[in-house]
Image (tube, rainbow, N blue to C red; front, side, top):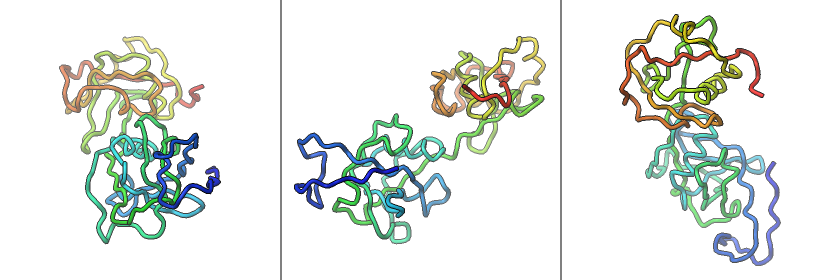
Length: 247
């Protein structure tokens, strides 16, 4: 829930609280966001919902770190920095809720970033923020007895491909099982893993390294897409404890 901000008498309509050398807390950014008027749910004009009304976000101060947070919050792929401005067909109308949004890029959602006062800015809709994210990161386990076991494949540029097992360990499997909603990873002897037929076609990822806390495998470190020194005998196979919550 967004807490109402009580304005002190010395705050003017065009005030930027970052310039106030006072011990003031930044307001909580509305927690509901969406991208509209774009070619899909992961591309478009950024809007936030506050006091039951949707409004736009001014691009003043906006950068790639803030876009990363929005893309993560919406469950989309990586953010791309787009400097395009909205035209008459894509610019918003009505309220401009936020400006001077500041994020580190590590926040789980926009609500944990800082901003100026809601509704207090000198922006116009020509300055609405436009965000573009890659399509949601998709993965699957194939050729297993259930959807929670099998050879790992990831989708990139519309093509499914495998993941090389260089550096692959329990933390990486933990992220995969969690992303698929399959509970925790379980240990399976190498002999059982060898029953899976190697993949063919693209090997998309190699040298994947996770902390085990990521919400998506895409947030883990890895080589650039398609760069590897592997063959399909090194394809990753994952077994998850289907139906068990990750406690």
